[in-house]
Image (tube, rainbow over all chains, first blue to last red; front, side):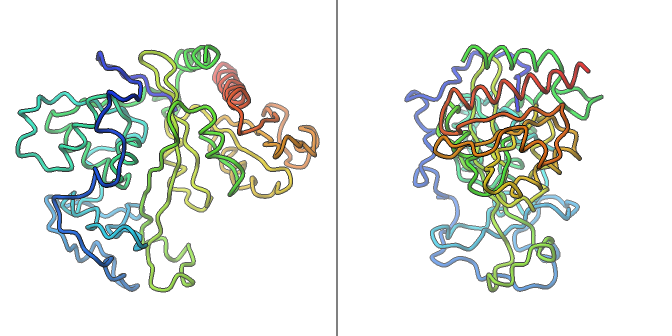
Length: 190
Length: 174
């Protein structure tokens, strides 16, 4: 997938020591904002959808989607974290659908981050160098669906800029010829 | 997208050409699919985590190519649908000793219309079958490139990507 950011920026995109915070260390990106649980949540038995009985208060009503991720982490050893969707107030769908390869770039000034949720702050810190939604999910160890919602929140608050991948709307969002030519040229130069 | 059966070398391929070590992103599978995915053998577990490895290549100052390895379990189609949108195309890695493993990926891309190439990953440098033999076995049309590759080697992975983008470009211009 190729994502040409539409906006202007002067970011250095390379991964390097200068990135600092972005090494994806699990400890570094723990969840200090939420109580840690020693034990994984007890598994939910089959039965009514968890959407019918949200345990976290919803900030806004959302239409449950059949394919929306469920707010329960796979209960393996080593991830006794809070339910990931608690961070999103129980929402499982972002306000608009972000591509997995959409690029995110922090535009907020540091003082604007005061009082934001820690998860939002971590995303803003990470995206001082441009990152895709997939990278945010991976580097901050947030499930993809949660990362999408949090990034959409930040975009709505004007704290990050999002560069959705270009694509030809008439061709189902497939990359257009110009983009393909640029990708081909870039690959040959590698 | 880099697709193929379990253990065929998708993450190896991504790692060979990515500028970063492959990262892993996870999605949590909804319990709504519990009827589709038989999870009875996992006891009370009603969710499954779907992991995707990916890498990136900065091609130009304002152009980044992301390489997503599809989840090894090809039944997680919803993740594939997510990836296909905006994708240039797919490389279907094939281990010719386990040819059937690639059938779901080939079917998927044929149905979705996403340009794809078949890359025969020669383990230990062995290519027991020729591309022509594989083309016949898979009933792949003459328009779809079939190449040999070694997913461990950057030059091979790069060459496979170039073949794919050339193929995608031809498909768009046709």
